[in-house]
Image 1 (spheres, rainbow, N blue to C red):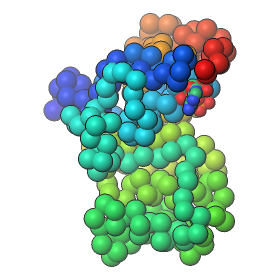
Image 2 (cartoon, rainbow, N blue to C red):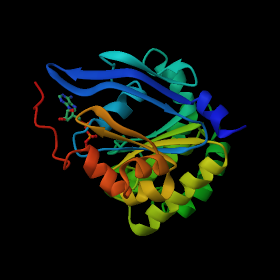
Image 3 (cartoon, protein in one colour):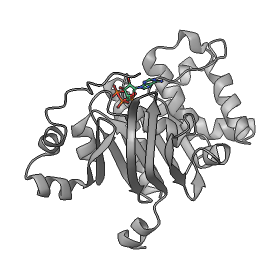
Length: 256
Ligand code: ATP
């Protein structure tokens, strides 16, 4: 299938997506289409609305207006069904503290209808690659930030979702785990999956992605392939980022 046909059938479609908290608009009239089989980065300075957007995609937040859909399923109305197609890595994963790593994997896998042997079969290679195997009998309350992130990534991958939604995926990871995570992401895309992730790391986005969007004060400030954006602005992604975010001060209007 050509890239143009892929673009005509995006896995993730966002139309007019808006989130207001009282008088404050965190995300405003966002429109994006994410083609299947790509790594798509959502960039933006602190407070731009990236996490709010991802939470709406996961049905955790109800949009004030507009819609988002994954393979035609509405991200809010059909949020349970959407979770069968999506693996979500939150920026700050939260677990039941007094479950062991192994029990958390079992719990999440069984929610997806996997039996224990299949959960072990799927998780073992990833546990080795992420160097988490030795911590499986430990309680999550004792996990470091990076260990929690690794466990959350495993949970997001267990059901082999078509779309991965990753919020600051390498935040808190050491260089070894960062390298492993990026390799896993690339393998998923080579396998036909789609990855949508938010990051502050422009060099990482530049290395990984074909297409990026830049949010600023809740609005889409730029979107396109890296080549399109660089050609339009005549510079690196960093120069594009600073140009469209006006020096990148965080939003001045405080939440109501
Ligand atoms: P960062 O890069 O710092 O993680 P972000 O781009 O993910 O930032 P969001 O967390 O989506 O930004 O926040 C966008 C804006 O919405 C911020 O100004 C934030 O203060 C505001 N906001 C987020 N959640 C709420 C809430 N529950 N109530 C009021 N305002 C909120």
